[in-house]
Amino acid sequence: MSSELPNREQALGLLRKYKCSPQVISHCLAVADLAVETAGKLEEKGHKIDIDLVEAGALLHDLGRSQTHTVDHAIAGAQIAQSVGLPETVVRIIKRHVGAGITAEEAQMMGWPKDVYAPQTLEEKVVSFSDKLIDRSRRMPIETEIERLKMKNKPQAAKRVRKLNDEITSLLGDKK
Image (cartoon, rainbow, N blue to C red):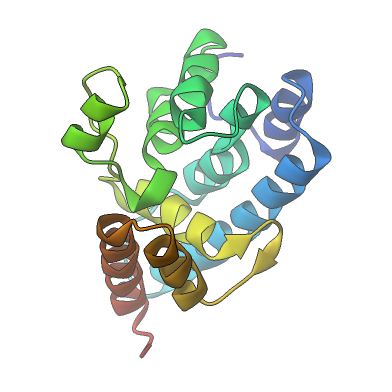
């Protein structure tokens, strides 16, 4: 891979090369479809967003699930992405998509390298937001994800998901 953004076929090829399951690949496709749709709506509203980056990042956000199905898949995926020479912008989307962001304290408790694990750019936020709205490969209300996090006793993650949802829907002009 070069440092150029992979197109859809190249991204899917990477998921297959690293032996992501068909379920993970269909999830990534569903997240990418929603993320590209969301990015297009944001662009229509006048927001500057790199739709090709959103698509590449969304397709590859769960690349690390080829290694693990724990939250550590974000780290594993970022390492794979770096090892094949993907652009740093894609690596950051993979690293920052989980849980609408992982705090420095949470990352330290999990033994992750010191870094930023919360989405910073609009592209990173759109991928993380879209991931929270896709359960397996089907869209679901954000409330479903928020309730799931509360049931798992993760109130801070639930708050981050709510905040990210509110930020993106506000940019979209949606009343939710």
